Amino acid sequence: MTVANTRSWISQHKKGFLAAIISLLSAFIYLYTLRSGFIWDDVNLILRPLSLGEDPYKYIFSGRTYFRPVLMLANALDYSLWHINPVGYHVTNIFLYMVNVLLVFIFCYQLLKRKLELQSDISGVTDNENRVLWVSFGAAVVFAVHPVHIESVAWISGRTDILATIFVLLAFLSFMEFERDKRWVALALSGLFFFAAMLSKENSVAFIGIVLIYGLVTGMQKRRVFLSLGSMFLVFAVYFFFRNGSYLVNRFVSSPGSEKAFFAATASVGSLVERLVMGMGYYFEKLIMPLDLSLMPSVPDSAIYYLIFLIPVIGAAYLYKQGRKFELMMVLWIVITLSPSILILFSKLASPIAERYLYMPTVGLCCLLGIFAVEWNRKIIVSVMTVLVVLYGILFLDRIKDWGNDRALWMATVKSNPEAVAARINYGAALVRDGEMDEARKEMLGALSEKNITVSQASLIFETLGHIEFKTENYERAAEHMTAALNIKPGNAISLNNLGLVYYMMSGKSSNEEERMALLNKAKAMFERAIQRSDRYMMARYYIALCYLMMDDYVQAEKFFRDVIELDPQSIQAKNSARFIHLLNGPDKYKVIELIKNGGG
Image (cartoon, rainbow, N blue to C red):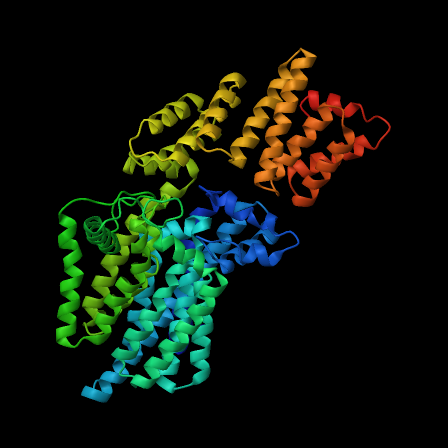
């Protein structure tokens, strides 16, 4: 094929060609994450499909604070394909991000075309297909390389933002078709996508506000605007019913700081206004200039954020005065999609402010850029887009290195915010996994001395300290730390299981038969309490089976080994359980005890 023919083919298939480039780019820049493994609480999330059992409805629709059935279904599908191979989960996240970037390209293209169509009706401006296409491409590329998205893509658990944004964009594209062509099936489809978005993440409720703004911007008939809003509120009502909305309402109306309350004890009118301004100022700053990103940033307290907060407010007022409706709509897109996350600033949740909350608002920023750019001359468009892509690309490359593995992430987080207790705890846990016990102990004791430590964090620190002593075979000291963790937070299934494991290991070191049996009984009691707290706790069932073996109760041992196999047939513990059961039913069952004593358990 000649160069001329190649150019001709590209010209004829320009949309598909640009879409392919965007898709490949968004996948290529995140290939680095395939080596990242599981990070933070990824393992807890991906192992949830183990609780699917015989009640899939309970698994899919479980959750109160976080009610995300679409995310749970996606995780269950991934688990069926990849089990506990992190590479597969990262592949899924990259694929979902490709879809999202492609939808941003389509969204920006359709929005610009609609804007120019309406302007043409009013002022004779005609649609420039080629310009709109390239501007939309540039906006999508800026979206693809924006550094604040790394948290949602590199972190497997962060895919909830990607899923929600995919469905919100599909819902909006469908609503645009309803506004333009008056097709009722498009409105129904928009409602369906909105429902899926809500089942992906709660902040998708912002779509109702977007529908209202777009209806006003495009001059829809009031009757159709109200009908559209009514349809979306109906979808929200159905969602509210499924997610046990009464529980959510009770959390919001409970006294701030109380056990079941959503709001923290510090929530007062003055503090609410201050945190609102500071939080929004922080988000506006990171949206435009994503420097010094952190997994667990602190809410800022500098007066400069009052000024940053005012900039978009003044900008929105100017756009309104100038009649720049579509530009104003994109500014409001940013504010509206941020609003649900702003509530978290006043909550008791561990991360009151986070990069991932900017994922959906970034769509508004990139489309705002596209709307302005479509009116510039070609040289200015290319220059501005190139500068942004290069700048964000450099920041992207610097930030993504922090997501290389669990330890690198928490080291960077502690460096950026040393007062973040949760970050120090996770960094200490990463050091434990790497075998650096002295450094891990130092980090845990440092976290314990922080002023803003919570009860749950204190319990987790003692549990980690116990784990450090367990790893160094100082079992007596490990038992002290684990007991301290349970005294702070009684009934914690993980702490109960870990203390039971300490007693189990101590029994193996004892040469006194009476002491050995007493330790085994204490271990068994801890495992039983852990199972009472979490019925499908596989590890507790595995270790209680080992206790029964050591106590020569083979019937009970086999029963619990079979439970382990049923809970997770592909786990190492299930394979060991199958081996033990085989020996227990064979002619030389007493070799099982020797096998355990020699490290076979």
